[in-house]
Amino acid sequence: ADWAGFDPGFLLRAYSHESPYVFETHAMEYSKAVAERHHLEALVSLMAEIESLASDDIPRRDREILLQVATPWLGHLGAVAVHESQKDGSSDEEALVVVRKVLGHLTAVTRLVFSSASGSKTAAQAWQRVVSTIVPEQEELIVPELLSFVVEKWEQAHMQGLVQEQVMFKFILVSLVRSPSATRLVKTLQSGFRRYDDDCPSTPADFLAWHETQEAVEEPLDPEEVALFQLMIDLVFECGHLFQDHIPVILQNATVLLATIKQDVASLPTFAFSLA
Image (tube, rainbow, N blue to C red; front, top):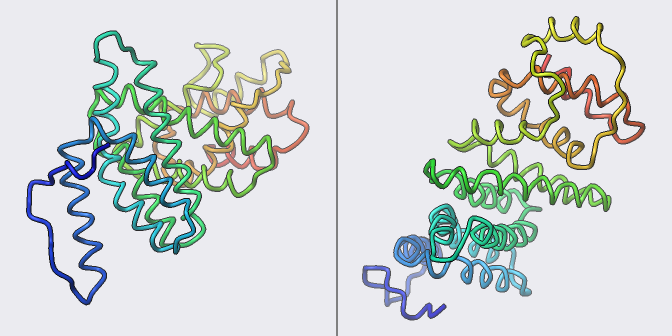
């Protein structure tokens, strides 16, 4: 992108100041103004450049500032995705490729700042900005792909035994549900569970009684279902009230599926019992 040609709509500060925070604030104002005017053509290239700069051997604080500068742009990801999907000859699939590119760059920068308290706070604000400003039309396109991305990346980290990566993606998901889109996020997540009987009772006590009359079923969890259970554990304590309508399906999956898992399930019963 031709960054020099981007006009923020106001005059730039042309003199020095003793306090570095004046320049940080001015950089944020400039980034926000330019993002409003040029996000459609520059979001992907900006995030790629932010990742490249953050990957250099620079101080941790500088990486955090780079992510702060990028944050106003992330609030326009929904608009960019819809714009891409509505281009002549384009489709939702091509728009989602753009979404994945941006999320990939954001993940890379998050990985670089996540280890410190100030860096994790900055990262949380960046991820929340992705979903905090989207409208319903954008939400339908963004939320499922965003959650698919997080679940897929956690699953990969789990399979490779990368504990810190798993912690990071749990942190990302918790950050996301601390946004106005929390209800949609939880609803979309739980849609990944299996449904065996649409007529099962709708209250936990009635369901457990009904379950006693059913034949035993042995079906192993696939890696995505393991990821869903693990990721939802923290969410129950973060926003448990949003799970009330989904308790029957979740308990059904827990009671049918968890008994067949032979390893790595120590935390899964915690999730089921915390719902009950």
